[in-house]
View 1 (cartoon, rainbow, N blue to C red):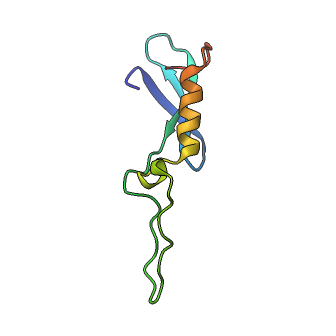
View 2: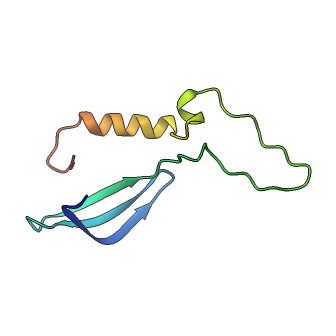
Length: 87
């Protein structure tokens, strides 16, 4: 990430933010996706009197705070070989 300068935020989704960025060396304009990983143990629940949050999901990755959909996306991106994908 130190090789890129963020220009502006393009969009935001459930698992991350996409930025328009510029390569500091080449000047090439790219899109960078910064993936948000919840390391705090999952969803935060409001504290209302009498409210009991649902039990944690059984899927190991989700109880560790990393949704399985994010893991799938990262795995797929790691396998792709394309000039538009910065590794």
